[in-house]
Length: 116
Length: 110
Image (cartoon, rainbow over all chains, first blue to last red; front, side, top):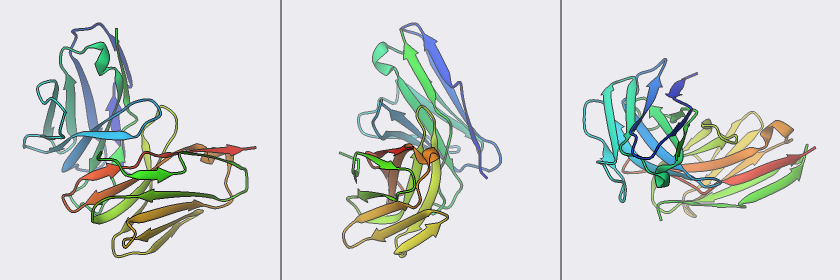
């Protein structure tokens, strides 16, 4: 089945650091990738949708200068949390989908980000 | 809120019993998907049902969709300890956006 690799799986860093998270589709081409944020025992909140070769579409309330998304190829999207602060600590999950919107999303295993 | 609603929020049943979870959504959809999430992990896709379908089966899973009521249900039959997880529905609307429900935490008791 389709596999999405996300890394790192766990990051601890100091306040003010920028952190990059990678999301790769390993055996399929992902026209669209999604980035979610999840707080403990809560659902996934869509942060942004990225399409290969174009700018990401951010959800209301998500700062695009804070959460930089790059989808440079059909197999790789990156999320960079710039100048991270403790309130950015969360579980970040990416997903990828082939070009048909009636296909399921395939999820990475998530990245737990802890900002000290 | 962008989220759909699921009920119950938490469910504990004995191993071997059936588990039913419900989901409601707000807008017209192209399809609805169910996912499972084990603690601290990503989501695993279980089943996708299109808006013109009413019922779908996959192994011990049965999903129904009622577009007139904007609701869906997931039935897991003959539950096992390994089914303990959180279950989320995700509706894909006409704008190609996926909205997740709040999830049901299922606990299978031995």
